[in-house]
Amino acid sequence: MLVSTSKDGVIGQMDYFSALAKLRPFVKDSKDGKLLVRGLSLDEMESLTAPDLTEIRAAFEKNLKYISETEKEVSVIERQFQRTETRFFLTIGTCDCPTGRIIVCDPLAYLPAAEFCPVLKTEIPPGSYPVEISICRSEAIGIRICTVRLKIKDTPAAVYRLAEPASEKETFSGFPVDAGMTCICDAQIAEEYQKFLDRWHQEHPGGNHYDDYFADLFRQSEERLPQYQRQGGDFIEWENPDTKRRLVMAASGFGDGFYQSFWGYDSEDEVCELIIPLVNPDLFGL
Image (cartoon, rainbow, N blue to C red; front, side, top):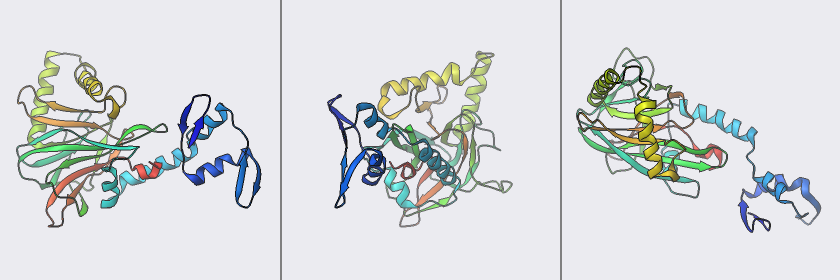
């Protein structure tokens, strides 16, 4: 832990071995495994806690591999939903599922285009289910949503299995993101969403449904929960004004890319959740 007398408080902390490596240039003497470090200026102390861009780039590359993997360990996801100084989680809304046929997609760029918004082969009982997110936060990468989770049963997941598309024409799993947003929704809700957008664009010719409609809802979300979101907002529960049914949108980790989803099965081998892994905070030391 680095404590500054200039600022009269803690200005940073790091793990023991990282600290030793960064303090080497300031060592005046060593004896019997002990180091004598000269006094550091405020600028020098703050430089020690500055993010290492090389390490961040390496972690980012590993995260790209993480989101493309077709297997997920339960322990990795479990840790994301355990609160620490750098990890948080909360329920951000409710997903109405009148048919139980589930779509995972980028709601702003593609919903409900079938080729980019696959309906999943596995169906769930019709109902309304909470949507949860895990979040990590640090000076190096800011606030990032790590996993989006649709919780279908209260039981914990014992294993995760890749969510496959229902259509036999699909040769691969996963979905593209081009507007930095993810969504889990019911197939019927997707159709109702499209009807709303069609009507909105008729009433607002030349308008942009994000800039002129959804952006304000995201800003309101940030105002309500600023400690969990970046500027401009990262998630909303959207209620269709025509049907009063809900879907949830959440930012996609580091933004655009290609993401996988996984069904969680409990110890009775019953579906208990659906997850979209976005960021592995373990890779960033969080």
